[in-house]
Image 1 (cartoon, rainbow, N blue to C red):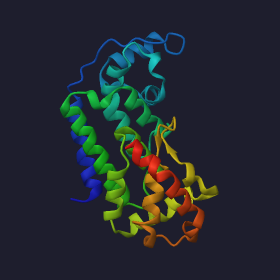
Image 2: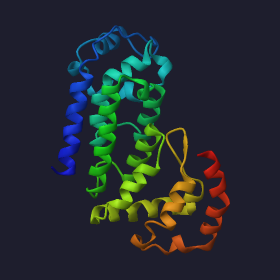
Image 3: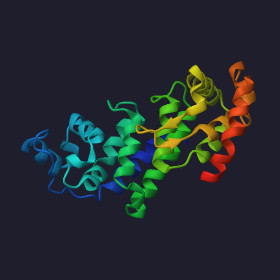
Length: 235
């Protein structure tokens, strides 16, 4: 089974598992939403318009009477649009909203289905270049959602494909612009400080896979040595 097929399978499984989330009466900010919107969100999932799903996907939690329950019910629609690059919302915001919805505290079948999507999406991204969602955004979403970066970097290290290397080239070119890598945070709200993990990874484990001499600038190594003890204490 190809990585794209594995992703499709994981998304289908997400649909099935989350189908147990029954409709409920949705309430919220009556200044931003009308009774018609609440009625739509309280009805069958497949009848909720894409525009309404996108609106909920990005809206601040306090606009809803029961934000975690509403977001949980819409997760399959939100995630399918997200990973296929069809959600007109900042990708990183979705991770922040999932954290705010407390997704890791949901029932085990739900969280397992979501974790399977994260893994399948990351594998599909590394095997597809260009990917529907740029690799930096994909990595940021998964990192913030799972509050972990190292496992995803390990997968990238182990994936020696032309697509993975092409993504690596793009990623380095992006984070080395004005040396952003020296203070790089992930997430819509800059929740995850990725500097030490990413810089150490780029300068050692995958250095020979990137033809970018900017990674050889001495001050990057000095910077890593200075921040590494702080990163070790944080973990």
